[in-house]
Length: 187
Image 1 (cartoon, helix red, strand yellow):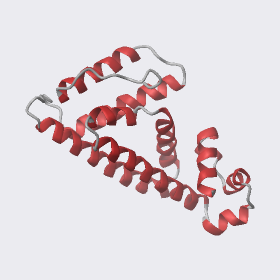
Image 2 (cartoon, one colour):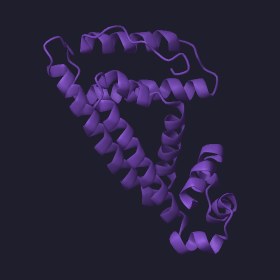
Image 3 (cartoon, rainbow, N blue to C red):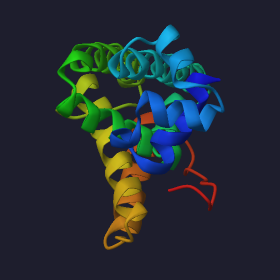
């Protein structure tokens, strides 16, 4: 309940609004109860981050286990809600040194999972990644998806359709698959 309230506050108002008092109000409990479980705001934020990271890893693992892992990974990375939360965590890492190490560790684990998927795709006979390494492909796929979602969140759309089409053509060429059919409600 406390971590759910933390998530609501962070999604609605950003990480800077997260305090034990604000979370207690959102959860409908007294602040001392939040302090009982999470003595400091950093303890609360760390617990929330770890839960979010576990959920993200599960979604990535599910995508990578699909029949179209790279396309599924693109869709996971392009999820606006996930991206908004990821941006908050990155900003948090810049301002809360006590959380920086954990956030970096979890991102590295996720990046390794994604690079391993690209390595499998690149090893397929129909794949020609050129000079792109699996790790670079994982960074580029995630970065482009996040940039599109973040920009669209503030009303920027110039070049987005072209960027999306380019990434989707690259995925199709790498995987030897059919053209990507997108849900019109996603990037």
